[in-house]
Length: 243
Image (cartoon, rainbow, N blue to C red):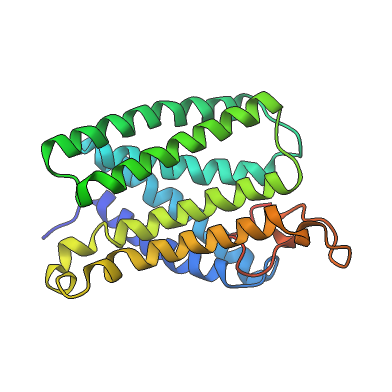
């Protein structure tokens, strides 16, 4: 089987993104290894999401195209959360809201279509979860626009959950995205564990660190000082030197 150039780029960037994402998650923030892993992760994920969106449109797989676009959206807005100064927003944030709002409508439409056509995995639950996450992202984007930006722990939290979800999307494209196609016999043994443990592990890590940042005094520990950039977080709190 021959793969087109965009398919090779998509697969290669996805593998690099997975490896660099894991490295960024479990290395000390601000270290040389962490900074390098974060940059590689961002470049790889932008490549794999961009090529995925392109192939989705080219093959008429609109749901895959939306998934690629929304991965790009999560990564870019996660990056902007820490590149923007505190309490600042502008046209980019407004554009992000409009993008997410339109994608949410499209995601729910295709989720309903997939269920009606009988091709939805697990009765369409993953489709509707994806659409609900996009809707939440759109609502939070609107909040940023209305409030004129975010500050303090909310700013760091915005970065954390969007980068983690971008990474979860990469993991999910393999588990269960591709694995159930190339290893069907293995999945008959323990399908749930094989398919869903990796992406849920990333989501669990995201929830844990969001709770630490938002609901504890860790954010303003006097011995540590306030968290203002991602480098102030401990080793497993997020990906990449993006602040």
